[in-house]
Amino acid sequence: MGIKEWVVPQDKIFFDLFDRMAATVVSAADLLVEFVENFENVKEQCHRMKEIEHQGDEITHQIYEQLNRTFITPLEPEEISRLASALDDILDYIDGTAQQMYSYGITETDDSMIQLAKLIQLSVVEIEKAVTGIRTIKHPSLIEERCIEVNRLENVADNVLGHAIRDLFKTGDAITIIKLKDIYENLEMATDKCEDVANVLSDIAIRHS
Image (cartoon, rainbow, N blue to C red; front, side):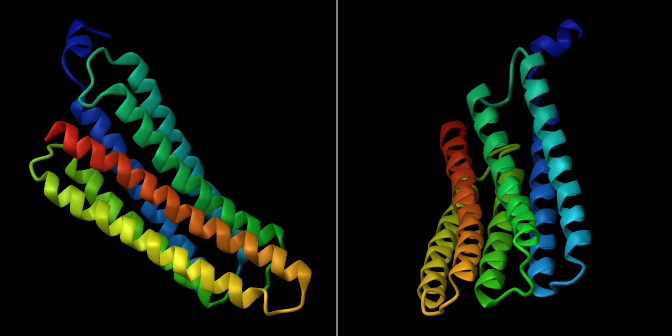
């Protein structure tokens, strides 16, 4: 590595990687919605999801590798690390829930799963726009608006989860209750992870504006 690479902030590299990671998370959320709305070829769909998750892992690895190699960074190293980790967490929960549905032998999805998947999708679209905004942070209020919307969507997901579990416990099949409760909770957890990303982005926007 030349002296210039050590001294000059590697703005483009980090922001390009974050843009790629956010786009990968959106791809996973899009596939999740497709998956729960058209619950067919489950094994094949899970394989596609796993491939997207692996792509995300590779981008996350590149971010950390670049962080270890770069002397001056465009954001605080802790901010870069937190954002990379939080984005990866969303991807892990999306993929993990899809794999869980296959492992549990779920034969059909329901409205609660579809609602939660769509809330994840809406959340990551907002996150992708906010991630794009941190490249220059010319309009921190716009980033903050995206983050507020992600927080709102997480609250909606909490309500969907509550209703889903209340309805679930009205049924009598204990095994089905356990399986579906796990799936609902993990889908909702993905929206919690979206909120974690929003909080990191909000902190970055405030600190660097």
